[in-house]
Length: 184
View 1 (spheres, one colour):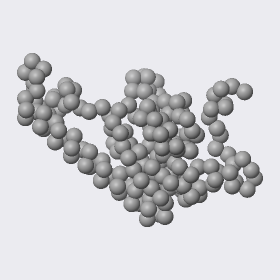
View 2: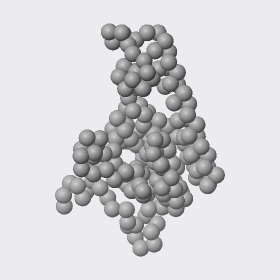
View 3: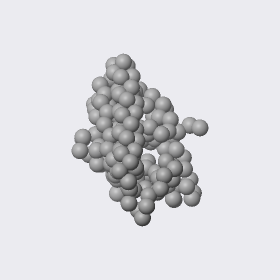
View 4: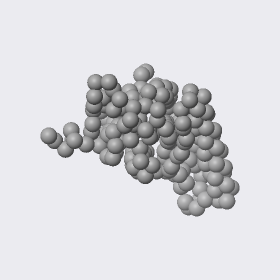
């Protein structure tokens, strides 16, 4: 049997009455993305958590800080002299990051409340960095039994250039992974 088959388990009950899954996935990490629709992923997570009586962690990964990125300055319509930021630009950047983080926390809190209203134990967290790596690291540290991650369906050049978080997680996670395809 290949290493690939050993590492990635099929989500089928180990016995005919299906009790294996209920006892198996007690800690589920749901990798949500604030910038894209996560409703399908979130609904799948809620249903699975109900079926398995699981604890959910709704997890989001922020990209690296925007500090020093030319895109930030161009978007803000500002420039820097000789690559040195003025104090106003630094303060504006800090304000943008602070407001975006507060908005993210509010959104994650809303998802947690929806899960709790459905009778599911749920918390949320977020980290900054490369999403695939952070999802796998957080899942391992938390002791997740299962990771739910969405897939946008990128193919070809866009997947090559932008990468695939779901592909990374499938190949690097320490636990089972369930990928939910985003429906257009």
